[in-house]
Image 1: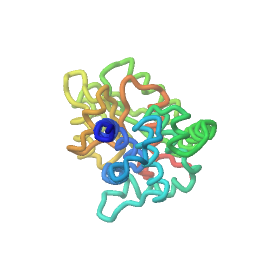
Image 2 (image 1 turned 45 degrees about the vertical axis):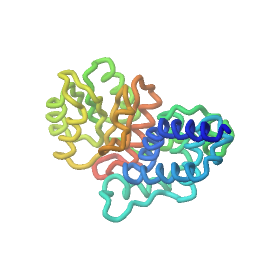
Image 3 (image 1 turned 120 degrees about the vertical axis):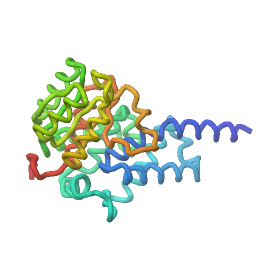
Image 4 (image 1 turned 180 degrees about the horizontal axis):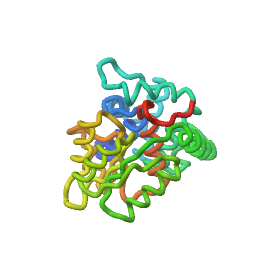
Length: 275
């Protein structure tokens, strides 16, 4: 008698949790289209057989666990022909071979998606201690692999300096800090960055999204990390979305994880890459 209610509750929870699975999937693949295909395959699997998540502590953990099974069975993502892959996906493939298996997944689940080590173990089929070890190893391996130039677009001075301190400690060079759209465009053109770290709402009520769009049109494709207090507003599926998104208030680990992931998929042309 409770099956209809249970199905309705499951559907509601899946709709609520799906945007965050899509964020996670895109961060793993470095591209919206590729990540979304994995996320939708996961959703379809659960809709076809809701019992697959019946024993999980939460629908969200079940959703990510089913995703991980699909992701693991498919191997490393390979870009489809016709996608814009020169900078973000193809050049990342060689780096995948140098990483310990499952480290990136564990890092994102913990630092960006906020899962505890027990939940990560459930999602990935590991013990809690194994999950902790993977996160530690991921930070070391990915942090040492790529360094580059970063433009910070942030109108709050304290936050801007905090971000600069975090990425500088990781070995990256901050080319400049911009507070408005026009300021960001000018500084991005003057010192071309490998990665852009941008707030959504800027000092003069201009848009960080507009600033990034203008810079990418001028400079070409490169990874971008957006910071926002309202991530669900950018995770609607109605328009192109950022592959890397940090929620305010952020933690240092979240910034480190997102920057490492974004740099992982960045071009190697100008950046310092450890071979």
